[in-house]
Length: 117
Image 1 (tube, one colour):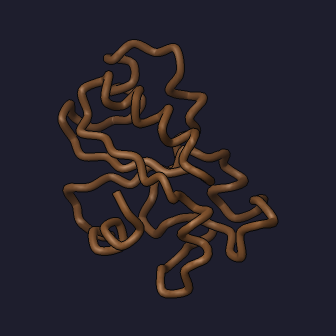
Image 2 (cartoon, helix red, strand yellow; image 1 turned 45 degrees about the vertical axis):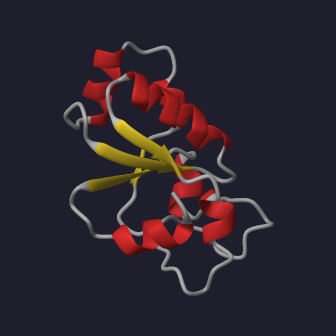
Image 3 (cartoon, helix red, strand yellow; image 1 turned 90 degrees about the vertical axis):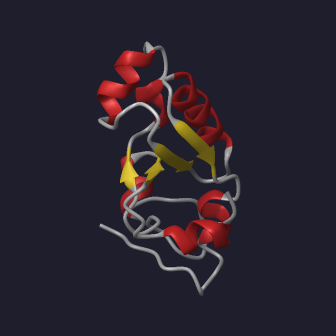
């Protein structure tokens, strides 16, 4: 998924946006200095990628709390952690996609909204 595709789907109840970075990265309290903005994509849920590792498909579905087949896009800082999360989500039966540009790209685009908590 591209930044423009994701931006066009913000607020779509059929899509869950999953930020798989650490809670301080998600909140905007701590991030990478190369990013001009800190925070997260509006409406994104935070579920750190480490929480998804080593779980069965059923355990992943229980943790995520969505029915099998739900549409999810994951992102992180640079697309690496979200690629791992996407693999775990697909193995659990989700229609999962990686936003490879992730926060590194999103934070540079002033035309894209951001939230911090």
